[in-house]
Image 1 (tube, rainbow, N blue to C red):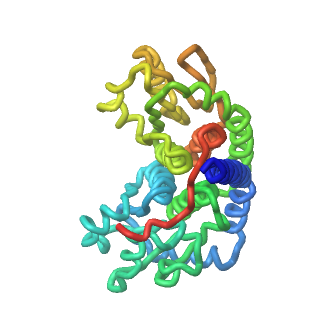
Image 2 (tube, rainbow, N blue to C red):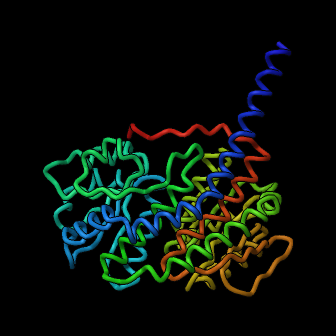
Amino acid sequence: MGTKAGATKAMNSNSTSDMKDIFRAECLEQPARLAEVFRAYSADGEICDEINRLKKLVAPGRPLVWLGMGASYCSAIAGATRFTLSGRPSFCVEASEWLHFAFSTWDSIAGPILLTTSGKSAELVELCRQREKGPRILICNDPQSVCWQAADIRLPILSGIEKGNATQSYSNATAICGILAAEFLGRPWQADVAPILDAFAHSLDVAFSRAQEIEEFCRGSLTLEIMGRGAAVGGAIMGALCVREMTTWRANGLSAGAFRHGPSLDVDSTHTAMILALGGTAELGRRIATDCVAKGGKAILVVDQDPVENSDHLLTLKIDAVPAGWEGLTSVLVPQALTQALIARLGSGYIRSSTTIE
């Protein structure tokens, strides 16, 4: 029994070590993958043709709807936010909810834009099978998938094969949603690419250089809640998914507004709040951090502007600012760094799979 137990321990240790290295590598590859997406969506003839077809099919004057589940839903938030910043209505809806309760509205909206990294998610597969509806517009990472084959317009995520949870596919899909929103609006986006890529790469370095410090700050907490506003809501929910999927440590992602209405009452000495206080609503995030600390909780405040303040219960990290509406990209980086450090301490039994059953 001793030998078997020792072998099992060694296997688990090797698995943890492998996943730690895999997750870190896939996170650090994000800048290169992101640069390739921006290049392809600007210069690849086949992709540009699909975008032009899409722009002709999306009905002007109607609310633009984006549908996804899990990480894909988080990416879709960026598209809806970017679109609404122009004064035009756009909404991100969980595909399952829309399938069962709003399917009859298909012909009354613009879109929907369907997002699924795997192309196998149960709800998206069902939507793609609805041949009487159209057009079926898809953003997907797998050209061999059921969804890809059924779609009328197909846009690739170009993130390659991931072994950890969604890192490159989240950041790539988030960028694609931002690009499409700009294209629908007739707004040029190419000038934003260089500052976005510079900010993303530097912010990734900053976050991962402080990963252990962030993890040590969280020790002793029983609850982690990650929150943001605007496009950063996507980063908050995705960041919490990252922590939960890779480490099984309980984390919750939500909008900062939703946190104010109920969850903030739970703050005590066992609670850590990570507040992604980015862009034009940063001051609201700073107030939440102050209130959490006043209640005895801990706050990790992620900002893109000064001042940077720290105390025993407040840890502030400054990342680089991006143009308005693109915060969904940088907002996920600090949660990713925390996840990396948690894997190193707690291990990870993560095995990538697709949710093919509703």
